[in-house]
Amino acid sequence: IVAVAGSTGSLGKNISKALLQPPYVSSFSEIRLLARSPTSDKAKELESLFAGAPARVVYFNTEDEKSVDEALKGVDIVVNALTHADDSVVDGVIRNKVKVYIPSEFGVDHKAYVTDVNVWVAKKAHVQKAVEQGGGNLKVVSIYVGLFLETGFGPWLGYDTTNNVYTAVGSSDAIITYTSLDDISNSVARLALLSADPTTAATVPAHVRISGSGVSVKQVQELVEKKSGKKITVKVVPLDEWKEGLKSTDVLKQILLAAGEGWLNYSKVNSNELVNPGESLWKWKTVEEFVEAGGISA
Ligand SMILES: NC(=O)c1ccc[n+]([C@@H]2O[C@H](COP(=O)([O-])OP(=O)(O)OC[C@H]3O[C@@H](n4cnc5c(N)ncnc54)[C@H](OP(=O)(O)O)[C@@H]3O)[C@@H](O)[C@H]2O)c1
Image 1 (cartoon, rainbow, N blue to C red):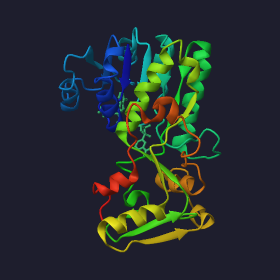
Image 2 (cartoon, protein in one colour):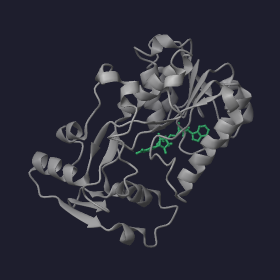
Image 3 (cartoon, rainbow, N blue to C red):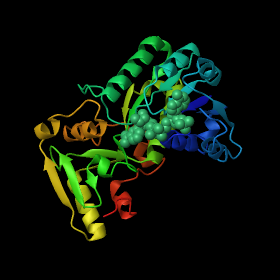
Image 4 (cartoon, rainbow, N blue to C red):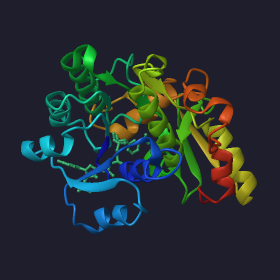
């Protein structure tokens, strides 16, 4: 039995969809989609995707311990796609003797990154708690994907697509990994199955990097200029200047700093071959294809 916490969220919905479809759907005796409001439109949308799959939407609110226990009863694999690090999920995972836990990471690999950014500090502590409390009985797999391809190119992350000015921190040549929601969801499904199967569990590391597509700001500039015929300006802000007055709570600016410092480049060291050997299971979506399809306006 697999359960998805946050199944009505942006990523959770996509992961749920992947699990409900071939080739994954037949591997589970039950797919439990956890929702705060099981009768909401978002939950009904998920139900409309069941198509005969052994799935159900179940009430789950981390502020209601009883609901957490009822939702996680008998579950083998928990995929957490909540917005924030919520330790009630770890408590529920431990109480209900879940075997595989995929925490809500899905961003920067902050494992070795010394930072006081509140979101990453909380995520790190959450994973540590799961590992410590789970002892040898719980397999915890943290998945880092860089930036979501679909939401990684907007003014919030330095791409001013109205004025066609892109901001690069440190260097416009720093490679940044972007992974599409579909590729993340397929990777999650594969890693969940590999981790739950005793014959393959040992092949799955505790920290997994996935790299859909790696590009620099300069390469994005070239791709969008070619597609749109318009001139794009790239502004490079030196790292020291960017760090001045930067707050630990300013997550988006901290993401750009991490990118400039190389913490978002997973193009060389990653587990792509483990989840999708030789691209035999699906084709990774590239930034080039995204631009070609009009994903970045100019
Ligand atoms: N790398 C990137 O570029 C990137 C971008 C975005 C997100 N992320 C990461 O991806 C993960 C998922 O983010 P997201 O944007 O998909 O989240 P989201 O859209 O905000 O969805 C959050 C989900 O959590 C549920 N939820 C919130 N509080 C809850 C509670 N107390 N009890 C039960 N359910 C609760 C929500 O339910 P309702 O539907 O009821 O509200 C929703 O299903 C996060 O770890 C985030 O940091 C990464």
